[in-house]
Length: 265
Image (cartoon, rainbow, N blue to C red; front, side):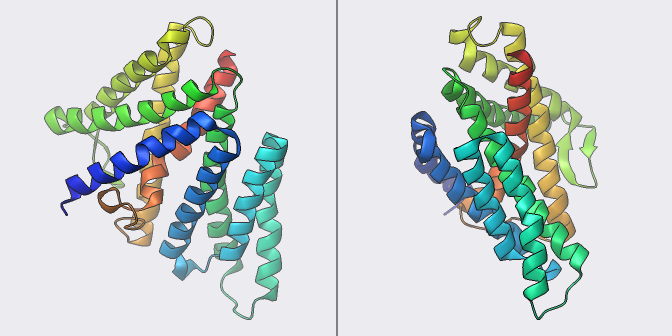
């Protein structure tokens, strides 16, 4: 199966599932976030296996972070993330293997902060009263629009490299095209609730913030993969690569969107 048709098939299967569970929210969306996050965390720890991450500590910290968020809110999510340090130290002390403590702790906590907090903030956006579902849809479709706009504009007129040492294919022209597409997507998704949720300028600002965050998310994962000498985080999603490859932009867009909305509200 070609990479293109593999991408189409994955999108056709997964998109209705994600939208449906986002609409239901609550524990349904929690279950999706938990499953996707554990897969992404597994991919990261597999890529970084030579750095000896404390895998069980990362899994426990991630689960506690999302459970804390679901049961007690943002403060308890932070507590769950911080528990990763405790579990890392305990499991490191119990282990017979003696890798670098700094490296093992660092890559373990990185995974929980990166994946756990990223998914957690997406769940927080969904929990916004009255407008959480459409705010979540705005993030999903704005990230898609930014990625698509950047790809086509960059391919057509891209000349100036954005981060050649990390991702040679990204250009500043593509970034501008992606940002404009993201602003348009946020406007279209949220327009029906204009004035009641966000004003039109605020919608455009949200789209721009998501576009910038999604680029950072993509570049961040590219930097990690380049450092670990891997091309894709996995092959679970066919042409999309691994779960972490599919979530990389969303893991940064979620926190950005949450705080932009919080500032406006």
